[in-house]
Image (cartoon, rainbow, N blue to C red):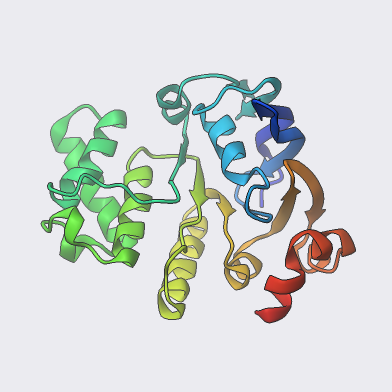
Length: 244
């Protein structure tokens, strides 16, 4: 880790009607690290991603990326600054090729078609999809659709990548493949935030964990410390972690 703060979330709050989805949430992400964000269903993890990336506007609080205030910017403007995300449910354009799916992301950063095509092919190699580049995206397996989702994000050349439950629905072998992919991305200089329920993946990947419950941060620190926190065990890890 470099020790430089790449992302700063300060006092974020968001409610929907009578539901407080995120409560006064603050944390930082250092350049070069993998930060894991965990918590029970409904704890505010995905809403936090929405607030950071401009899909929701916070009621209060600030998001700063690379020293710049980005609170409330629309998603395309956030992405243009180097912060991109994936979604829980992969939604490629199913009837066009894997390569063209990735090319559309590359064109956001590189308007020259030849340059963008080169970037798309480079990204496909990085995620292991080069042999499937000409297949229709809708014909991919679950793990390869996850790879494609990551590839589309990487095509925009992010400094920070937010991965929202990339391992959902994967079998044990595929989880290992996904862990290797994310580790490789970090080795290549990418900073990553991972929202994930697969605890062995979170534990092996993350430098630090932030734990949410009912929209609030209840713990933060090194993974081994966090999973021993009584409040975390009570809120989330008791059943899932001890069973793993």
